[in-house]
Length: 93
Image 1 (cartoon, rainbow, N blue to C red):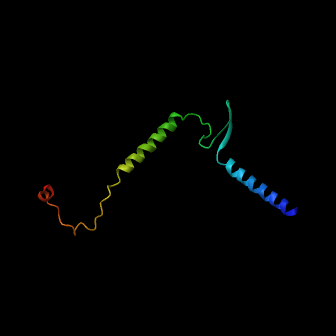
Image 2 (cartoon, one colour; image 1 turned 135 degrees about the vertical axis):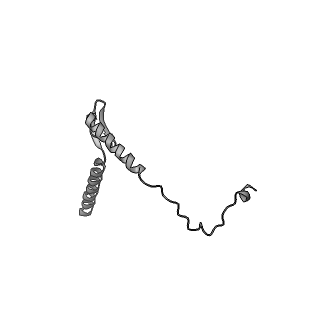
Image 3 (tube, rainbow, N blue to C red; image 1 turned 180 degrees about the horizontal axis):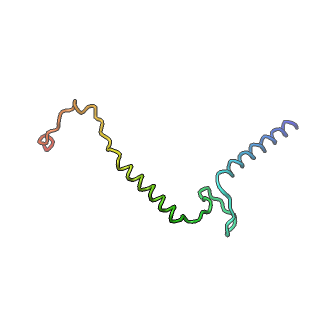
C-alpha cells in the first residue's frame, strides 16, 4: 500500500512540474471570443511615437552605412599558383 501511495505522489509531482513548464511557454489571455493562448502574442503596446520611429530609422541608417564599409572578402585559393593558366583559345575549342 505504501509503495502504491509513493508511486501516486511521484506521478502527481511529475505531472505538476510538467504543467508548470508548459504554462510558462505562452500567455493565456481573455479575448472577446473567450480564452486565447498564443506563444507568439506579445503584450499589448501602444503604437510607436514619432520620436521612437525617428530613433529606429537613425539606428537602421547607421547599421546600413556601417555594413557598407565592410570590405569584400578576398577569395583564398591556395592552389592558384599550381594550376596552369587558362588560355582563351584553349577554352573556345
